[in-house]
Length: 594
Image 1 (cartoon, rainbow, N blue to C red):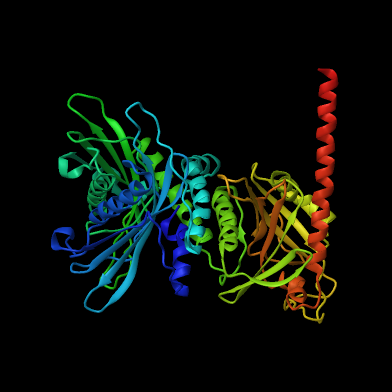
Image 2: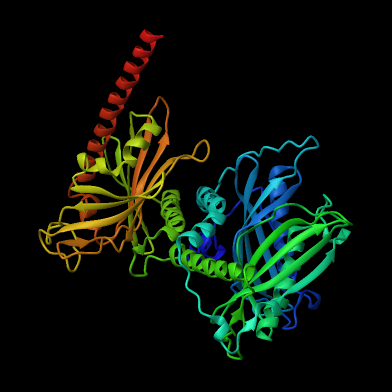
């Protein structure tokens, strides 16, 4: 995931100016003044040095939580938003967002401070995964869970599970895109100024010395990253014959450690050059003496060249080598497509139009991530206001950045896993929700994601307390194309999640017969309670198409939310009884035949 987009939680919180005093025991801070020895030819902090500081700070945070030595397992995409000049101060803050069984996610924020003008700005933020070093007998060290203390920590804790999910399928996304897509490429051999990729090749060897290693005598992950940035910069310079600027580093995983005395062999080559950017691939291998080379890391970095006005320059074309070079050339196109998908989908703000993102198989993972993460972040907000309550069915509202959201919740006498199964099947919703006239399954994406078309009643203009869309006509039905993403709990205490958001499909364009509506963010969270009870909460960010259905409830002019939720509760209870009776009959039959 791109750190620019996957970490937008911090950005939104900073914009609001909501500073929360954090007492997180895993938090580690580092401040460094940039000296000439840390800088490049432009008198700016070298990215390699920054990566070493980031890795050190994150490792200290991970070890503070684990209470044992830790190793960098992977680093999510990093987008460098600003450069840092000599004489300025770099402030790095790292803390563990969530601990899983034997791995943990560490969030890192990097900012710059101008001491003379008292200015601060964000440079980048990143997510790193750390694992504990195995014991002497090879056993993994289990980690204690993280307890979120603030709203921001709760959001990061909740979304960390989604980021982990994306990391696990990252490599498969590339393979799937290459397999199912016909990537178009130009014939670079006919381009007069095309540069042969072989001319950009770089090979360099580094000897791992004690200053390069940590207290476990393993090479610092940040040190390896710094060496990789160095050879990648040389390769990029050979293409553009200028001084390139590193903009992004794609997500990468450390495949194995290296130790003091190892020789680290680094190879870099420009995989592809686009109009204003180029991708450089880097491979790191370690070996000792006559031993075999061990592949320890690979990374892909994007560079730009700026003119005197700070605008990206046009780059020469690249002519790839046969076979392997052609493969790398095409994979670079796929990775660029994925970077655009991530940035376009996950960082999209609600003020942008259209709200519905076109759905396609190659961006499904990021749409699903965005869908579930948005609902989790909405649920984690702690400033919900109780609007009304009737028979323990509560309606809450939340106004944030001129967007009104509502939450309806109540306890229902049904186990959480059973409620999850029933509510996740959207085709049954018209039987208990009068706002759903029709719901059809368009496409079964996978076991966790589905595409539906939902038809809802028209909203009559002029109704008391209601608002209508500008082009909405009386008696015209509305329809929605929804992506439904469901998630089971990642660990004890997590809720079941059913998230809904609008998408667009070329096979189902808007028609004159229906007003096409938009759902920003909606869905259920289901939390296991005592005595087989479940706390069921329904959330919805009120888009113009959704607001008319609930405006009278918020204004106190009706209690339709109460009747709808009661109908939902009856639906769940009824099906729970049928489910239990089926289990009893199955048990009785088994006892008779045994």
